[in-house]
Image 1 (tube, rainbow over the protein chains, first blue to last red):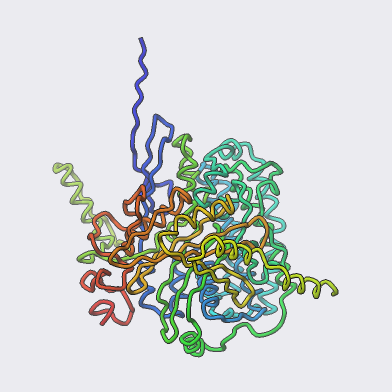
Image 2 (image 1 turned 135 degrees about the horizontal axis):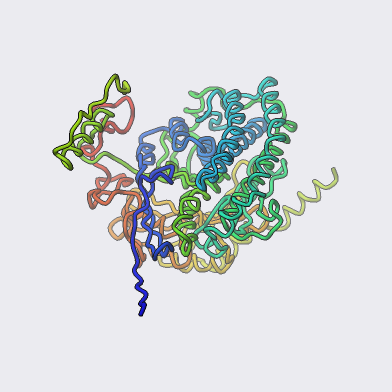
Length: 426
Length: 188
């Protein structure tokens, strides 16, 4: 006489979890190993950027926007700049548009390589993690040579770019393209034709086209589910149409129709790596001479923005993770925007994947979340504040607290937990 | 080289699909203010301002216009005596350029009720949740009114992005605001 007892268990997944790179909380409802429902709670990385922005002027927000996220810092800066340019009717020199394309595509290469490595790491395939992250160093070095920094490049300014790409930097970029022409086929081979990868990624966390449309999935997540859209292409952004941009779909890479699983999202990223190399090559070839910014100095720009920005502007750009939208509303005579709101691609993608994993095994949850390339620092950008007293815990405080807790649990503990030798000076 | 003049004349004669969408909306909703704005890199956007009674109907109409319409952002904001909720949608994106459509709806501050559209565009619910906690718009019949970003112990009745006295008071702020004003909060 066997009677099957069914019961559902609710478990929290996060905010701090070894499988997640950033703090986010999912409450999973499980039936055995099967996921029944997912509830998303955000806000563990909330720094109040919009609230801070109410107290900053247009130029200061450029640097604030950049610091929303380390990986897609160019995208945020660029999209915010586009929104201000639209609101103020500012024209960008053509050479600056080409430089924006080059930096944007360099950033896309480094972001996609990072995510491919994370995906491999999440299924325990660390050889691939090391291969992709080793390859990623080249583009990071190139970005450092071109912009002076590995992250937060500060290349874009309202009405142009801040630094030019001269012959020396051009040679460095061409050198990088030559390196990647050899390395990308190896990465593609490892990811697309490996039985382990296929076993874990195929038909995992399937986001159907209907769910993707409902939840507004964007970027590789949307394209992996068969939504043919790319903000660079559908927006006819800058000089992208001249460079031959078109959305990369999974069928262009795998040859099969899109299924919307982890594998397809990964395949789109691999296709975009090649596309980015081509775009950079075309941009370097077609780059005209001329000036790189509309206003020569920041103080001129500051004075002009006060007079020029009057009304609303929308900026749309395809960040590595998908469509990024910034909205700016300003008033003539004020140096501050009245409202600035960014919307990051992870926001809709997170809700899409939360629907997509329903019915899957709990063991696949980590890789499912990683497959949208989540960027929670971006998503949790909204308001605010330390309630009541602010308290900063240093390493010493934390150690003291943990010793106190251990003593509380087990008062008869023996041995001295105080660390020997000098601790970290922080 | 001969192609260019032909293309230009075609563009002048035939309205673009962006203008067509603007026309259809203006015909169907005479009370809406519809405007096509072109920015400096020749990108057109349709800006629609709709009274809140017709908001749901308009969203339904857009969904019927293009079944695959993409709801990309909902922006809650404080306009002084009114609260606004602005949505950006991408319509007809099978061929570039897609139609970029902006829908703005306002509600007075003493009655900040805007109808919920999450049954038409499910992702809109998450932006509405943000709107509810950040500026205090009440979305009528929204199926989920919990907080999204703010912690659960955040005080009730304070909306961080409000510009009036319901915003964050100075006592709650510590070392925020401008870096040079480290003492005395943000406004001093």
